[in-house]
Length: 126
Image (cartoon, rainbow, N blue to C red):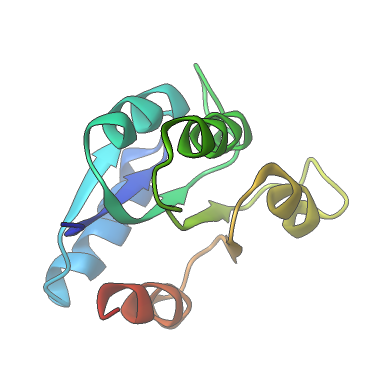
């Protein structure tokens, strides 16, 4: 049964902010520091959704998302919603790049509590 969210960001401050919001609203979560850790955790657990930074060392969010999407098909696993959480300015249209990589949505940094809740609350109660 899906119970938790996965927060993926290389900066502990960003993970901590999201985690604090989740704890306040009694939402369970796990953390990963990069895309490789995210793929490994996803391989062993079903998550309500993954909130993933785009630019991280070791493996970025776009590559991790593509791996997860490929493995979902290969392993016939259900679709895990993945939302980019990024202040990425490297792309002219980051939302489209994320969509093309297989992400379900985009939350721009700096994150506001309302932005975060608009995405996660419907997922938490489905």
